[in-house]
Image (cartoon, rainbow, N blue to C red; front, top):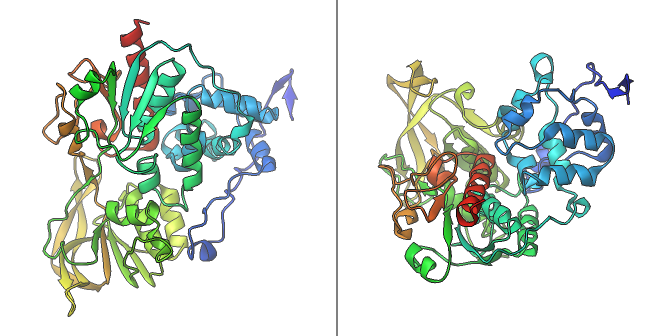
Length: 469
């Protein structure tokens, strides 16, 4: 380890440690994890690249403000347990965040090394530690304070809030509509990106901390906010997500084998449709699959279709690859696995075959015009440029709307015109002083780590409100 005046100095010539990935041709045939994660040797080599900056911009780039230089320094010293404890001071889900966070736009995007070469692989180092939970110390728990909090939804925002509140001495119950915990982490993100066992391990850790989970419990149906308060809860945190799919609003959208990505991914990810008939959930295994959209959900859907046997798995997007909002790594992985990218097209109509199921989709060819409010160039139709693409499965992955159960929960929460909950950006408190909210049901569809950040802020605000601290 190079030292100057007793202080570590990074080797500026050392290249970024390559990801440890399965061969594309092999992994595209099953649901094995794409990335195997760093070995100890790889983690130590990558930790040597950190500059240990006096002003760590990487921490500013992290929505939960993990002390990144400190945990990397602890990795260098082979104090893996201490490094994991450092992360867990600010994030309960390092094994998850290390896999699915868009580090390139957050911590790694701010890394000083990235200005002239490649940033430190912070996400891989976080995952390396998160996959060694046995090394962590037992979480420090405050004495029980006698206050009860209900958390609605067990996605990343809900379980982060629940974990923080449990550490602060609250009696926490999480109400989850599905039969298992994790929310979008289990129904939305495929096994090859985030194994279900990793999510279960994090849920088990929360149960060890005393968090109770009530599954198959749809708040708004089984109980309203007022009824939860009558049951003795002192506060509620609403983290239902934004899982209502957006419609393409084109003819034929209701044809058999035209799916919304939410439905398609839930069937495969959570209900094991990829193992039918071993499991009871069937799904259509298309040979020619077209997915409309350019985000991470679209990538998850098209890569899932490829693994289910699609000979032609196409991602169709109305702009070009450069404007796709998905992570660059997801696009790279998809193309390596044989996914075809069809840019500058927009769906016009789904065409039925003789059996009534979709057999093709008519698309309008587009060109890029002036930038719109997002800063990306607006797609403009090319007059008369229409073509037909054969498909036996089509999937719409163009985004989501607010979960309608937010309204059914009740209380005095204000909703905006799109059905999202209005909540204070810093505290998560809604217009009902007894109810907090965060994650996608407040912001619209966003990242796992931003949802976690909202859960963490809300837990701090709830603690202050209920305990006066």
